[in-house]
Each structure stands twice: as C-alpha cells, then as structure tokens.
Length: 467
Ligand code: MN
Ligand code: MN
Image 1: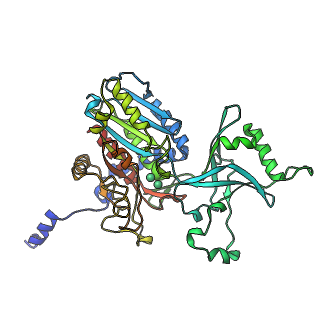
Image 2 (image 1 turned 180 degrees about the horizontal axis):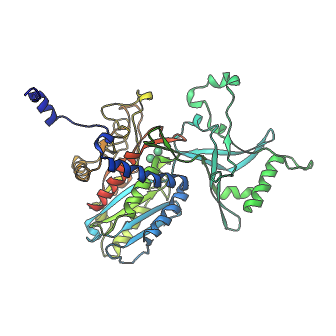
Image 3 (image 1 turned 45 degrees about the vertical axis):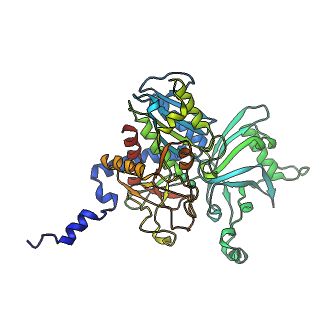
C-alpha cells in the first residue's frame, strides 16, 4: 500500500506534460535506425556543399528512385514521380496522388543554400607578393569564425564564348585548400580594441590563393599572373571570366560523428541541408500517396528568399499552376487546400550560452524534431503563425506515427529572432507550420545536430506524406 500514489501524484501524471529526452523514449531499434540513417546524411553533406551540388545530387538520387523530368501539360497518373529543376539551384520533387490534385497537396519545403563566402566579380589581386580572392559573405555569419579555417572553392564560371566550367577544388584527397589569415595574438592589441562585431571586418575576409611569382622581370603583379596562368591551364579561363562566375568558398572539412557516444553529427551546412536531406529521403520513399506529395529544395533563404530561385519568387506557384492545369484545375484552389511543413532548423538550447534562450520554450538536442508555431522578431513581425487548428492536426499526426517531437521558439522575446520560408508559402494560402531540427552553433563553419532528431525529421516528413 505504501506504493499507492497520492492524489497530487495522480493528478500531476494526468494533467502535466511529460516531456523527456528522446533517447529515453526511443527503443534500441529506433536508435539503431537513426544511427544508420545518418550515414547517408553525412555522405550527402560531403557531396552537396552548395545549392548547385545539392540539386545535382538530388537529381541523381531521384532518378535512381524512378523520378522522371517533369513535362508541362502532361496529365500524369497516380503514383508517377517527377522532378523539376529551377536554374540548377532549386528543385521540386513530386509524387502524384490517387486523389485529384484539387484536393490539395502535401508540401515539404527546405533550403539548400547555406552561409558562405562568395567571390566578388573582380576577385583576384596581389598584395605584398601574396595572391588573394576578394569575397562578399552570403547570409548571416559571425565573420571572426571564418579566418584560419581550411576552405574549398565551388561553383561555375561562364566563359566569353558562353561555355561553362564547373569548379570544385579542396574537397578531394590531395587537393589544395584555401584560407583567410588572422593576426597573431602577440600583435592583436589594436584588433582587440575593436567592437566584437568588427573583430574581423567584411573587407578582411580575403582568401589566400597563392604566393609564387611568375619568373619574368618585365611584368608586375607576378604572383597574380602566375595564379591566372594556372587557372587558364586548368579551366581555360581569363581574368574577365570571373565577372560571369559564381564561386563560393565553404569549409573544406568533412562531416563527422561528434562525441564519445557518436550521438551527434558535426558538419558545415546543416542549416538547412539536414531538413533538405530528410525531406528528400521522405519523398524518394513516398509511393502511391493519397494526396499529391511534393518536396521543394530552394535557394536564397539565407539572403531573404528573394531572387528567381528563392521561395519569395513565383517558381513554386507557377509549377503548381501548370500541374493543376493539366487536370483542368485552378492552381489557386489547389494551393488553398494544401498543407506545408516549412522544413528549417531551430536553435537548440546551448548551456554554455544560456542567456538568449527562454528555457521553457526553446528546443533541446535529442528531444526530437521541432514544431515551431511562429517565428519572427519584435512582436512576431514577419511570422506566418500557424493556426491552433493546424498545429493540432500536426500534433496528432506526429503522435500517431511515433514521431518524437518538441516545440521550440527561437530565443527570448526581443532577444533577436529569425524567419523562414513559411511566410512565403502561407502567403500562397497554404496551411504552414515550421518543422525542423535543433542545431548547435547554427551558421558557424561546423554546426552540430543530434542523430535522433535528424531521423525524427525524416519520420515526420514520411508521416505527413503517407497521411
Ligand atoms: Mn535555415
Ligand atoms: Mn540559416
């Protein structure tokens, strides 16, 4: 009788939340499946380091899974699998449902661009007989994190005759890497007096690309000339070709397990390739769904979603309009009945930097995929704010399908904030909620996620498509 619960204990069990660490809730089989799933994820991170590489790898995996290029005007049958590439930087994958498209679609939307350093249009110069590339950073970075990190160079150069060359250097064994220097601590007195936000300034993010002069006393800028000679030999390019190039520097290191227990993944670019990979795998294994299912992997989220490869442009509604038109349906009425999981990362609580977090409402590593009702800053500005009804629907969906999940808000009220693509999709009249993975050190060269959370994101997208 002494084990009998008190009235208060019984009431607490019935009424109060029982949130706990996902590892304590998952069985061994699930944890093993999560570990296994993350092997494919790490390989994706190493292959798809830029938006263009992510599209190429997505198309490769989609074709292997039976997806065919979308053709406008074709009335596809239930179960058919399609992909549509937008300018090599964004991709839409679709599995046609058994129900008519007018009954609405299920969309998972993730982004495949990540913070990085873009080369300027006149990047190459020489100073004190060292050759450099000038950069303009892309997305929100803490600039001091990027010097003294080995960098690789990715992208495309369009030559004057219109032909293009792909660049990917610094990733393979034996490749050279590139690097930004920082001043030694012995001589950093004046640097230390700068405000922290200017510890490294934007115009100091200059990448070292060479140091040997071309042996000819008749020419100046001999190191620059020597680098240009190497690039001409390797790629057939001349200096003016940089004007029509997109070259991106990203950390050269590979994805790794983190921790003695190997419970985490550390890598560049997990915001938002963790959601891109999980939403991609969910659509690849989606077969014969009731509703038409779609994963869009978009570009330009990190700079505000503008531009014709970002989700503030019309490429997604145009695609849905075209798809609907083949069945005699109106795109807008399809979108009005559609649902979207806006798949983007959240900030996991960081015990070392606890101050910006409101611990009752922030997300935690290993507590599962995060459903975020609203984002935004300063009074929810810029949020789409999912309705209680739609949150309720997603909550039931996840609970019924064994998805370990949590809710989370990005930091304290008025402590900063951020947005996602949710608002742009909500503006098309979809029901939208943010669903993604908690990340430590978001936007740093090496970000950390939990293997269990990553797997739960995949399970969440699978449940959404299968429902
Ligand atoms: Mn993101
Ligand atoms: Mn981001």
